[in-house]
Length: 342
Image (tube, rainbow, N blue to C red; front, side, top):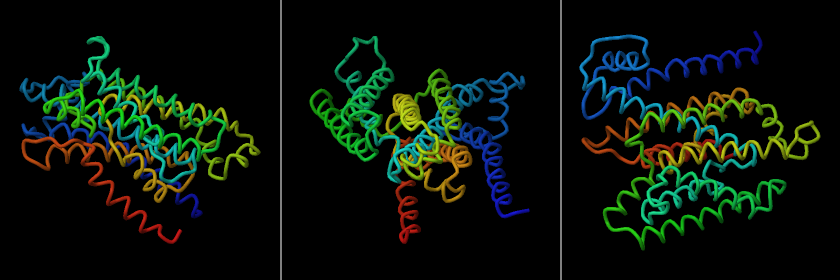
């Protein structure tokens, strides 16, 4: 067996372990909380909810596990996988190792849209916070494309336009909060802006899951094109890649995924920045391998972050964005130190 075959076998084993361990992690998340539930009870409640079994369980425990914690676990996994996927795509597409899902100003735009609905009453109750965030995210993305001069320009110009757009929408959000919110409203808005999985409903979780899975399939279809972007757009074009078409489709895909995630749970940083770097250290640069590894790593990372947010402080839930930053920042610093000579 050649070294290349051994490497592919190892990556296949990692992917298989990631797929098999994901339901275990989600069940563990569903069993953890202020009201303790055994792992076996949580597993039975989940299989009951899926219609696979009909165990006789206490109504309170079954309801907590299935209606509240399992939907939260699915949302965490979907958002983590989606953010990691978007980060991987953007870093390859823009050839910038610091690119992440919020580079294009989408997160800042979503925050402005959500805050406008929460504090200014835009829509007169007909627009929910999630819808407002989604509209804001799409508006921000279109503005960034206009500022950068379209999809044909170089990656550096898109990045600079994204930075400018992010600062603009962050300033608008700060202005709205400082002028239209009282102390209680400000606390609620800040909690949302830092990322929160509290109050997740099944409809929200299933929508996010569906969008992320569709996005994953699209990215997998363009995995070979992403490989050619590693050597530059000019070389990629000579290799037969339709550069403009691939860039448009993948940027729109990452924008849609990020918009849905931010509208559902708020802004959560470091997942899309750190996970792709770890993935490349494990699986190399071939995207057909790195895409599933990054996706599964993001799922596990976000579920773990959610567990920590609910258990670090008794009877208090931390914003999940705080936990991802506390974990992600040191990990990213270690990656930078490890690659200091490159």
